[in-house]
Length: 369
Image (cartoon, rainbow, N blue to C red; front, side, top):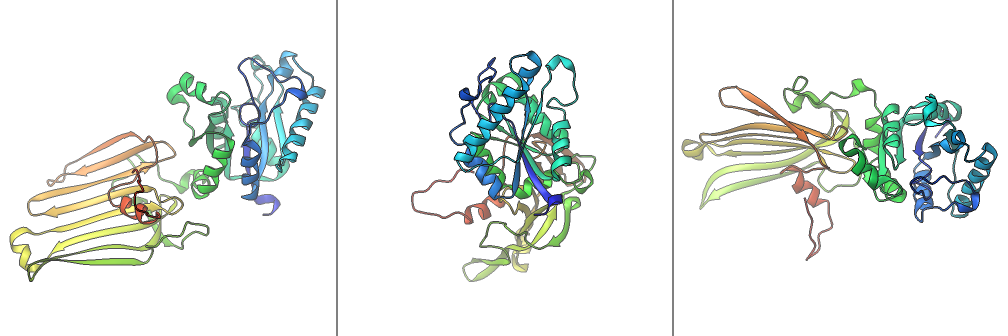
């Protein structure tokens, strides 16, 4: 990875890498204490190609609780303790000002991140921020990158304090949990830092049907988890005694771009035979788009024509903004949209069948969708 393409994981210091207590300022190197799994998480991120850069508000300097020289010794101790556990930092950037100084470098403002990128030759494509406070999450948003809230430090109390204002891309137990999620979801994190024009805003004004989000057929991205169904087509025949009553198929033949993300296109069809059409004509088509990186549903569409029964509806999921949008079209052409909050990764009725197929199934195991 050359100098101009180094991706970065920005890390908060207090409450993320080292222990932190409300109202407490670390003023002595000997009082520094690493979280037990922090170094392991940092090693995972470095092995995945991330540069590790601390971005920290150090108002203790502006308040007069410690000097720049003391802070330097604290950071030397931090680097030494991390190195002893096999972890390495690439940079430390901090704001020294009092919150009342109205400086331009205090998180959540993006100055520290931009300075690090400029001086270290980093790219924001595929970058991520990990921290335990609202300022950390909003720092990530100010840079246009993904963010992970850790539940160490102030993480849990910040959720209670700020509620829905605190909207990270993901939440994790600690820095190691954050690192594992980041590595598992590299394609999502890269997607979140694509230029805005690479994605369509998921609103009723922009989307008349999921087809507007489907781009060209593409190759399966390198590093995607292996699946047993790509290129597969399953054909079924429905019989009543010796009479052929209908046919069905399930197919996953291609990878497409779905609103800028690589996705498996799953299509399920069902139709009655000519003989059965006279009594109860069926023409059903269901589609689902599964993100290749983690097999979660990006959208689902169903068009059901069964005798006099009519159903035409779809739903798409906007994970970055934690929302969903759906549309139902009536037989007379009228329609209505619905929307709501997305509480986590979801599966639709079709994608769930393919999600479970990628699991190692053993007698007695349980899986919750």
